[in-house]
Length: 403
Image (cartoon, rainbow, N blue to C red; front, top):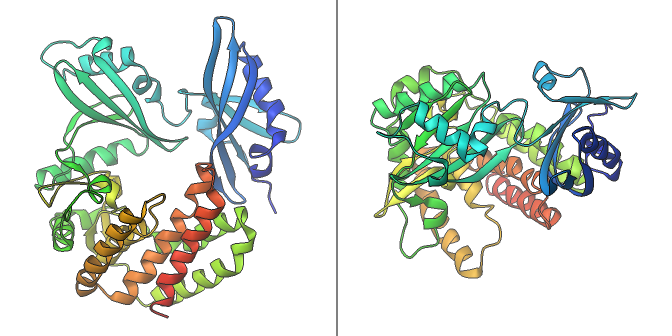
């Protein structure tokens, strides 16, 4: 089996590499811990580490990133530092100098972010760095990042999508396409040469939060209507494979971390793939990653939809299954919250069943759950084993409803 670097980057053997990286940069490594892992079994592994470093000017907490591959390094790897131990070459960087996210250094510092906003004429008069507050909302090394920017005067909030160069023009065009059609996607305030998409905050609250407030956050019909309001031009975009097409890939990723789940995941993969084989790809306009974290609600209705990067042709069941999969795997709920989500699913799923094929819906939802089961390990959650097992059991429950 090709060495994809998983063993090196997730074990103690990585310490000499991290120590060498820090010393090369002029510091001394005092301590470190694994922070995040992205693995493509038999192809590559990328990991980040939280490290305490003593620099000449004092101690700081730093984020180090390392990518290892079975084959040759990629062209963008050359933007990082390349280290070699005689057996393999790895690409290493110090946050925010991610080799694939060229705009991350701009989004990470108030002075650079203020300069970008001012250069783009976002405000009538320039803003100063002391009026900006930056919060990292999510960082997937070498893939994407989102930074929340709160401006105190004039009071406004933006979300900055840090994109890879090849994806930037496409994502920008998709936001504009939906806005022009009246779909409540975020308004683009500014795009930058280093591939930042600066979006104005949408109204309302996140459905992920509103789920646990009194009353219904929105109706099942409202969710379907939002999806059905996407323009037909979305169906002319490049097709993105549904989550179910990659179920074997995600099952392999989970099995690599928890081999004892291998037989169950093999059974799930076979049942999902066989059950969906008769369904055509579909040409409905779809969101592609439709879940509670992507939706804004207010007054019991959906008022906004986020992360439209993935829109394209597909099947409505894909989107509705994605939502079911996410709602079925929310972690760390208290009993009242669990009861609220179960009640919503009990009432929403029959409505979805009238819009799409019920068997297809559950099989696709199970595939989404398996893709999500890679998350606890990637994020190095303390109880990642228990969370992963629970998710796989949720996928099994969905499949057993229809097979």
